[in-house]
Image (cartoon, rainbow, N blue to C red):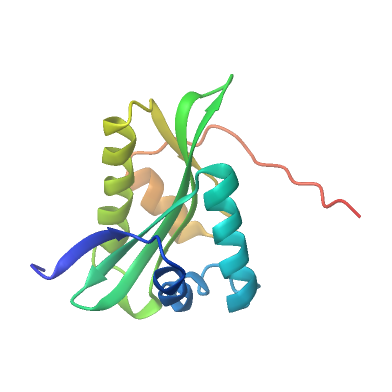
Length: 145
């Protein structure tokens, strides 16, 4: 476990290196679209991407945005959190999400929020039981044509 470290991903090469893990969560994205979206989100929305690295291998990735809304005040929205399929149940997601919590506290944000697909029952248990999150709302989406 001593080889674990968390690193912010800045360069295109670092962001691309995280793609194989992120694709496990965002299967609809190809590498070029993924890179374009990450770079746009970083520039426009202050999106930040961090990787949990074991030795030289990225084993988990998170992306989040610091935000301010009337509902939550100053908070961090976790857009993406994924652990490599063959590295699950080793505490990596917990370590990475705890890192996000600490980042938020250090930067004077009041809470951390996220959404999780209705079908992701294991993720819901993780957020509620391990990370002490509360279910506070449903997220609705309208696709514009």
